[in-house]
Length: 93
Image 1 (cartoon, one colour):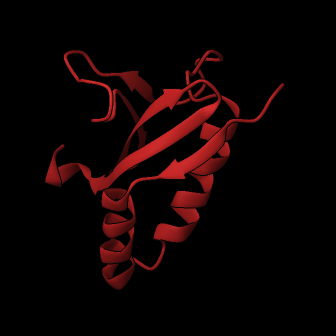
Image 2: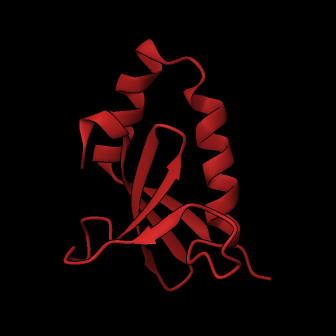
């Protein structure tokens, strides 16, 4: 199975930088999510908490993956996953 490439937006990088200041475990969560998204971003195997969001335009993160209290929104372009935001569920979208 072909691996997907991962790209990050400036907003995503800003979110991660901000989170690293107060949540030191964020790197392990991020690593787990990257592993999943490189292999099955569409969630064809139905093993992960991934949802396609309705009414969301391309470039705003049409997919969401959840890991505990954390949410990452992303889009998929051919074989590349583009990460847009990394937020706590309490912060919303």
